Length: 201
Image (cartoon, rainbow, N blue to C red):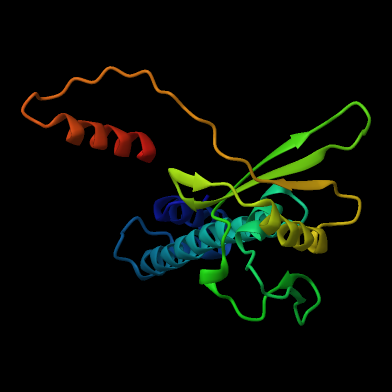
């Protein structure tokens, strides 16, 4: 965390006063040349420290998003899947990708994951649940379309990683709610508004 200009200035003045060769420049006036220069240097140091803080956050976010083999890595990879396109290795050889990015071919819109452990295998298995459609109105992906998706995930997964991609119909929720409404509004309109709010939620 960057220090304030006043903290940097006070620290610089205290350090200057410790040095015998600079005692003749000692002045309490804010308008003295030495104090003015010290204030300018403190402002520059403060700006530099603030930039380093911002840069550190950006670097941290970039590193966290680039860690390969994590559940988030597989989630992001599935969201970038393009139906019908051929996956190729990037020129630097560090990752897979598509030569042309086409948003219209991206069919997976929602991905969630769980790590399951069973008694037979000591290693956990990553289960990725996928769906297509808009939030609040998601639909399952057919078994025929899951075949190329599983092939895609098998190409990018790391050796020894157990990954399973599944897509199921969503659970049917029956909310038990009490609604108070204005009797002047038609009942059909009330039901439509309630349904919209529940989908949004």
